Each structure stands twice: as C-alpha cells, then as structure tokens.
Image (cartoon, rainbow, N blue to C red; front, side, top):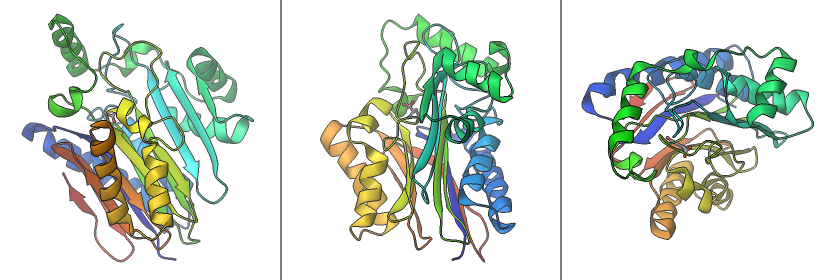
Length: 299
Ligand code: ASP
C-alpha cells in the first residue's frame, strides 16, 4: 500500500493576512507526518507527529496559541484513533498541557480508558511523564486581544465564530505502507466557550474516527453541530458503503448543513489511500501528500 497523509488547520473565515501562515503551518505538519510514513512508521505515529507540529505552531487554535474560554483560560481537547485496532485515546477540557495529542496517546496506551477530562487528565499526564506547562505558556497576545474584544460585545454565540471569527482546530488522517489508517484532532475549542465545555474533537465518531475497513476522518467547525450528526463516523460509514473519500466528505458536510444548519470542514482518507476534503465555511486550510507526488496545499 502506498502511504498518504492529509491535514487540516481549521475551517472558518480565514482572513487574507492569515492565509500564508496557515498554508505554511499545514505544509510543515504534512512534512512532519510524511517523514514518519516514509521511514516505515505507522499511520498512528504519523498523525500524532503532524498534529503535534500544529499544536506547537501559534497560528492554530490548538496547544500553544489556543482560543480562550469565557474565564479567559485555555482548555484543550484532543483525540487520536487507530483504524487497525479501533483503539482510541482522548482528553478534554485539559489545562497545563502543551501537546494534548501526546497525552491522548498515553490515555490510549497507558490506561484502560478512552477519554479523560479536566483535572484527572492533567494529573494522568503528570503520572506518565507527559510535559506540563503553566497556563500562561499556552496564551498568545492575539487571543488575549480577541477575548477582550469579544467580552466587550453585548452578545455572541459559539456558532458565529465559524462565519466571521478566526478559528483553527487541527487534524490529520493517514494511511501507512501496511494499509493501516489513523486519525487525530486537537483544538482549543470555541472562543468564549463555558469552562468545562467539550467539543466534537475529543468525542469518538464526532470530530475523529478511523477504521481500516472504511476510512479515517478529522473534522473542524462548530462542534455543537458536528456532534449532533456524529460527523466523522457518518462519513466513514458513507465510505464503507461505496462513496469515495471526496464524495463522502462532500455528502457529510451536506448532511451537517441540511440537518442541523451546521458549519465546518473535514478531511478524509479511504483504505485505497484516496484523500478527500470538504467544507461549508468560507475557507479551510489543508495540505496533503501522496506517495510519489509533491505536497499540495489549499485554503
Ligand atoms: N470543532 C471545534 C470545537 O467545536 C472547534 C474548531 O474546529 O475550530 O471545539
């Protein structure tokens, strides 16, 4: 099987001046994931490497640079899933962790659980030697300014952010030389979300899903809508019934818009290594690499 990887850097109304850093950040992430695949590594390791690269990049709403919640704090959600075994690990509403995708992997491999939240998640990080950081280390000036501006407005909803405000959840899906699939997603969630709010990214089948038999998907967008149509699993199921990855991604986004007036974007890969993507937000940043071809970026 020839390896392939596709990443996204969030589905939202990316302003023109942010296009370049989004393209470049997605390209760096694909390159990091591709290095793993090219070296014979697993799809799971590749999606983790790609997502960790974007968590470290302040351009995106994940890890360092994440959006602030209603209390002015960073709370992170992340999940990865192995399509070969259907094992998965996730963390939600976690603080003090710079790379929640690394912690999600530890949950998958070092605990008997799938999802840990809040204090339990960061305490588990400490017990597993996953690096902790101070809350301030995750905050960038851009997000503090945005928080102040949003707080000064009389009313705002989490849905509006996917129309006009910067967002940048990150995700990756890949296939390796052995034909195994994996998916990973990481996010700071929606600006001004209530403390303790969990979005689609860390919920299995909603923002993230992988099954070698059907496909792998990572989503971005208004989480409250994505969860209601269990978007990632819905798209995997479509691939399992004969839709190719592009058609399945498009149909999934159509379902999201039609059934719950949702807003978002997805990346997908099928067991033949075909990549697909779709979004109904003004823009979504993405990049992919297929064996034997150059990296392609889009926005
Ligand atoms: N889907 C994420 C959430 O609702 C946000 C995003 O994709 O930007 O938490």
